[in-house]
Structures are given as structure tokens and as C-alpha cells.
Amino acid sequence: MNKSFYEQNRQKLLQMVKALHKLGYGKTRVIPSIAPIGLALRFY
Image (cartoon, rainbow, N blue to C red; front, side, top):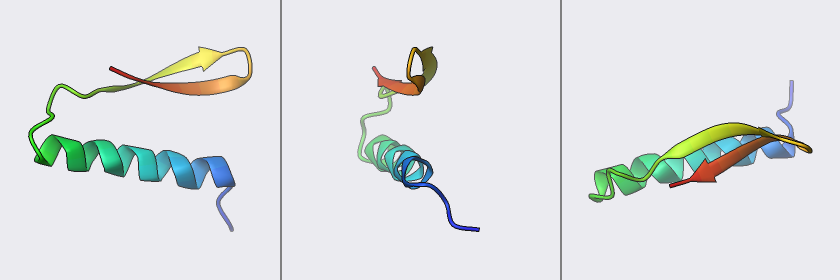
């Protein structure tokens, strides 16, 4: 089964944050939340 466009990008986004953690940006966070248009990811 093929993954949707959003599902693929969400995985890439989480991998990017993992890479940032390895580079020393350990306080970078991804926080999932509910938005009127659906699931939203916020970065802090």
C-alpha cells in the first residue's frame, strides 16, 4: 500500500528533527496538535 503525500513528509520531518538532535539541537521539539484542517505539527 502506498503512503499518502502527507504521511511521507511527516516521516521526513521527524527524521530531520532526529538529525538536528544529533547535531546538538537537542531542545528542538515536534508537538502534534489538532487543527481545524486536521493534524498539525508544531516546532519549538
